[in-house]
Image (tube, rainbow, N blue to C red):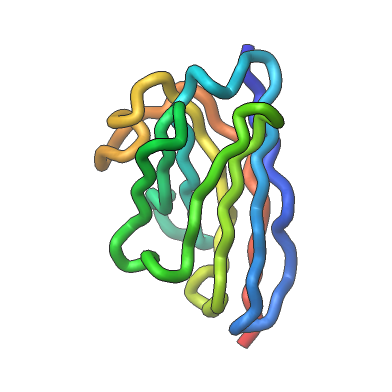
Length: 125
């Protein structure tokens, strides 16, 4: 059983930077593609970024490129999401997810096998 635990969320001011982390336990991380998703209050959960199992391929939603960076450390079984120049519109619960298939993480409507419980990010303007 794979468990994902997000951390690093909180209340931050607009313009600040934040790094979210996702710790994976139960399986070695190297066999899974990973993704970050976010869900603003009252809205659907949306894709943010993905990284392949090896870390060779990454993809960030076009509208977020330049501010969001996804990375992973397979030795530490962690995946990170760095967010720069935070905006009020970034306020959401951020989830990490894992799947053996990278394309299942990135494709619209993809169904990841494992999900974390989420971490709240609130940006004050």
